[in-house]
Length: 323
Image (cartoon, rainbow, N blue to C red; front, side, top):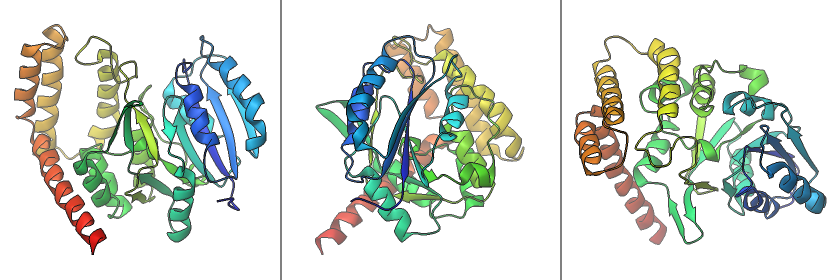
């Protein structure tokens, strides 16, 4: 698909030397042709920048425009995210981490959707969890069903749902380049979570999220990612950042009378704190403790319910496809 509309693909890198070539190759292989490639590096100290420069020099002819932007100092994920968007010239923007990959028809599928649904401003899709070349797993049925439910609601309702259960498929995000100008930049107290504050800001401002139940990206699952900490049960740095975000962004929008939310939040942070005090290592005792406390969190049962709904939804979808 040649396409008549320019799409900007923005790749965010930071110490991404082990994965960046796979990421860039997946963009090169897109069936949609009218693409602008922007790689924004957050002051990597490994050889990420050299790899990207060499790759762009070799493949420059594939793109309408290709450019590498390098931050002089590390800004952190949140500030880096907004700065990257400012470089785009395309009418639509696809964002991608330097360790994730696009499926071959990703941009084509996204563009076909937004052309068909002309009021779309922000699109999320199904995605594949990528562990290695032999292991690639589709999103859980419950998450697919929940995303479909959320994106069938109006923006105001989506905002309330995101406050209570931050279930979304941010790596698949595809959105109009006008969003920042139209809705402004989000308030974000977090250093390492750009996705949830961005989506909360958009939905609160009246932007309705859309969902397409077709995989478009491979989301890499890696122990070295920001939300994990090798050898630990929980990433304590990530938890501190998440708690700050919750206290400053989520809680002010939650009613004091919302008993289920406050109950769930109290047990959740007690669970995190207890396991960290137990040494924060994965063993039989911490895993048992974690599972017992999860059973005391009401939101656990919401997720189970959506898994059941998801199974029924997928079963119905398969039956309809056979008729």
